[in-house]
Length: 345
Ligand code: DAH
Image 1: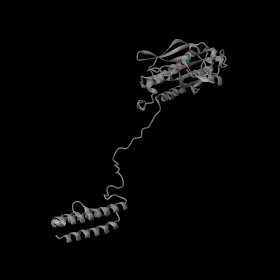
Image 2: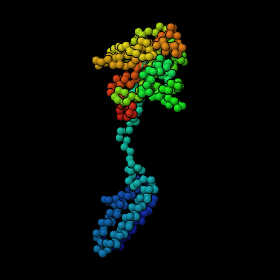
Image 3: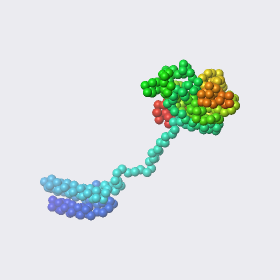
Image 4: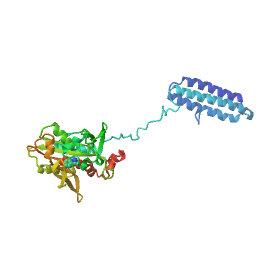
């Protein structure tokens, strides 16, 4: 074959390609043209390239140069057409990575309430069925509600600064005897008994659930912040038998119908008589709170007549109940905010 014939074939192809690629109007047609001009097997450029073998050796460099120019021009025209048609020259790859609709989707992970909050809701629900309504009190308290009205005298060890988070208010702390308005983080929810009785007349039947604070070193069973459920029932002729019935009904509802409870004699300044309450579990008696008949001094402090009214009160640790139910063994795990732990409950 002559060099002239070779170059003519190239020029014809170049003209034809340039014309049809600038006019092409859809992606499928473009793909057809791509195969026709530069297809790896039977493309026209391929056939022309094969003809190069029959040229004279000294004709080949200039023939090769021209061939490369035409090949690049055709490729650019294809690219330009693809861009104009908003696609790549491969019609199967339309803009961006392909979506595989058969892959499993991403399941959204829903959060849930903290186990302590779940326990609090559960306790409210059980006590609600027994006729107790829920009230709240402040976590920052004055010494009147945390101690004085609860019959806890000035020199009582419960007031020890080492056992309480006293706050500095106007340069004075609550342990300063000259500062009756001193404040502290409440060390017990019994404060709410006083607040409720100050605000309403008997009869009343309330519970209050919330945080309390004591400067204990954290270990598996202690934490400087924890939760209590306080209960109070005041009316005419309220007796200790009713206290025991309510606590037993509560324990069997929450812990299981086979649970037994017992009272052990104890002392709290705000109840007389006072008891510790235990439930029986795993061959052991486990303490879950304190209780008793509201001390007449407490009733008097809020203006109730102790001759006319009597009442019972109890205070239970929420963490203990929560940990028993969810089989949690270290109280610190509850407050580490590690979702890998909390997610389990
Ligand atoms: N406030 C007590 C405490 O934190 C618990 C308690 C005991 C509450 C006896 C009561 C009660 O209402 O009657 O240790």
